[in-house]
Image (cartoon, rainbow, N blue to C red; front, side, top):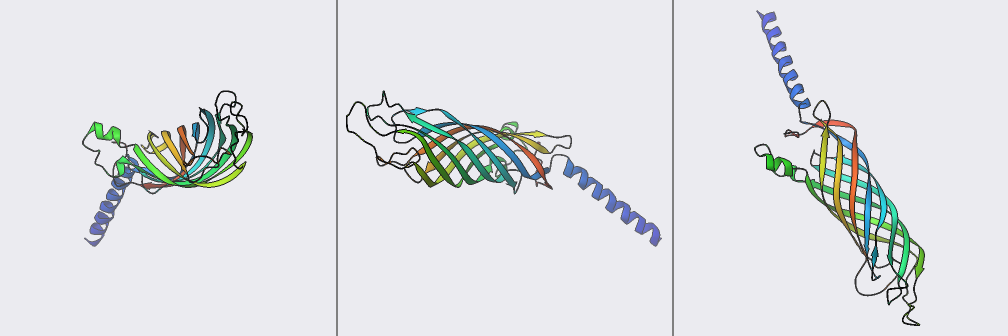
Length: 236
């Protein structure tokens, strides 16, 4: 009788464990670590009268505390341009190379809402907002400080600078699932507005407003390990 009871107990425990394991693989699992890259389309807002579009590239490492709460460490390198010395009456024109390091916290809607009973809410669960802190380093490679139209007008500034900034971001993350319904590939489309705590990125020190950079970004992330389970089914 004791052997039968022991066998029945072990069989029950094994059945429960198998059910839990199966459930964990069916839409609940996610990777805690991602590596990714993105292409960014930049617009500069500073002391020049006109803005020019430039590109940059980002490389990031993400720690996913949950499937919808993410901590992102990012390196970005690129170029910024603005102004036209022949057309703008102040004569300001610049080109600068830059790179930055930033940390962002990203909160997706799925973390704070119930999406299990509505297809509409399910579609909204991957929208996110985020913000953080970073340091940007700029090196002006080409600049015009004198106005052609106003002889003698000169705009001072520095050619190299390092400044803190706040990256404010909104976007949507498309999750692509593997055969076990785990989101191992993610496509990220977003807009990031970098509020710079200074006025030296473009090499000009003028006016009362600090510089800023707006960016449309398209990127991909790939899971690299640390598989764990979420409290809700991610793939619903």
